[in-house]
Length: 136
Image (cartoon, rainbow, N blue to C red; front, side, top):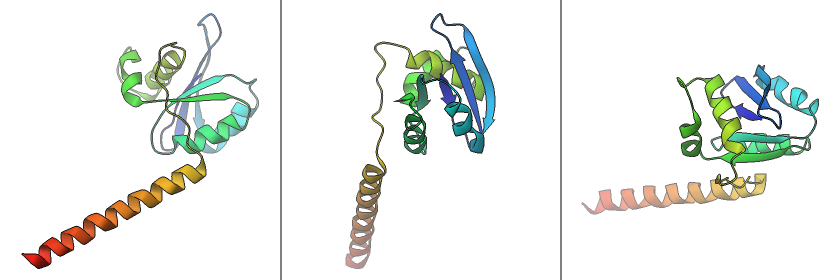
């Protein structure tokens, strides 16, 4: 299954073992976990962006196998104009490829440490800018 996660409405695209389409559905953010909890465990792919790690952890907790794919690796599988439905279908196709490169799902602790590193990096850059401004 491929899920295109957007701001408020998510697009689902599911296929069976033979490649036949079993699910094409738009789902509101609040209803996603309910719908996925009703499905038997399956392979689910999503593009690796902003809130994807959170959703990957939540979906994996339901028993599904979740894989995050870099957006650049999904783009070649979009067959027609770019929209949520085409993206979900492309993600679904990309996640089934044997040689696809996947992104590891980060835990909440790993994301917190990354946030600290980014905040420190910002402070160091701002301090350097201030020192350089005072020296000139």
